[in-house]
Length: 212
Image (cartoon, rainbow, N blue to C red):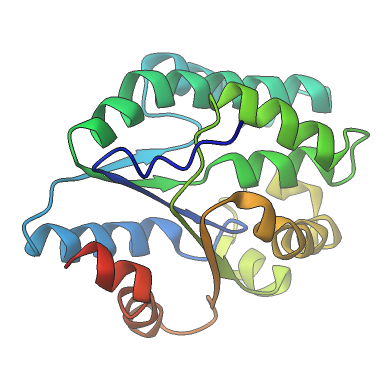
């Protein structure tokens, strides 16, 4: 059974999209705005944010390693499970606003594109790993893969090194799978300036209501 943690006083917000769309910048700016309203905010990164997650992240992003897609999928899920149970759930119970850089949506998208794992299977496995926890709000920052790769320059990790065609497939999968993320979802044009993106995010009705 899916859990919409309305019984918890906190809220879980996730930002997602292909690399280069500016997630980190927007997470920092959103967190600052919410803190200014007197709320406690915790920012996390998926994969990462725990000792287990950080070690798994290093493996997942190592360009020298060639991992089977199912291996990738399960490592991402293991990292997220640890983060949810040791960091996110306790924070939500304390009434904090948790903002996550990626979540299950990215796991489903990246491991389904070009692989042989169905999105249905990935959603099912992911919700088991998440203990049924869904985000209250998922913000998808969207831009063409060609623009994303220009922004990344020479910093692309193992996944982005698969090329523009692959990245555009990932982008389209994000748009296609977003409605399955649970909770409220929205798409924001990441080709705008950082200020324009920020203004659009803080103008979302969910964000305004969360601050009231």
